[in-house]
Length: 74
Image (cartoon, rainbow, N blue to C red):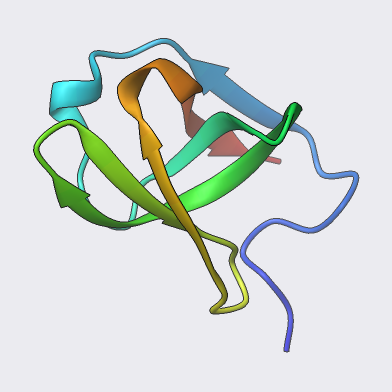
C-alpha cells in the first residue's frame, strides 16, 4: 500500500488558522521533537487527532504543534 505522500516528494506547506482545519487535511506538525506531515483524523475543539497516510493513528496534538497545512504535492 502506498501513501498519499512518499518520502522525498516536494510539498508546499502554508501557514493557516487551526480553526479552519478539516478532517482529511494534511498538516505539518511537531511530534516527539520531529516535524512530520500527518493527516487530521478527528477534531475535538482545538485538539487534532493525527495519523499517517497508511492508516495508523498517532495520537492527539494541540493547535500549537501544527506549523502549517500542505497545499501542494509535486
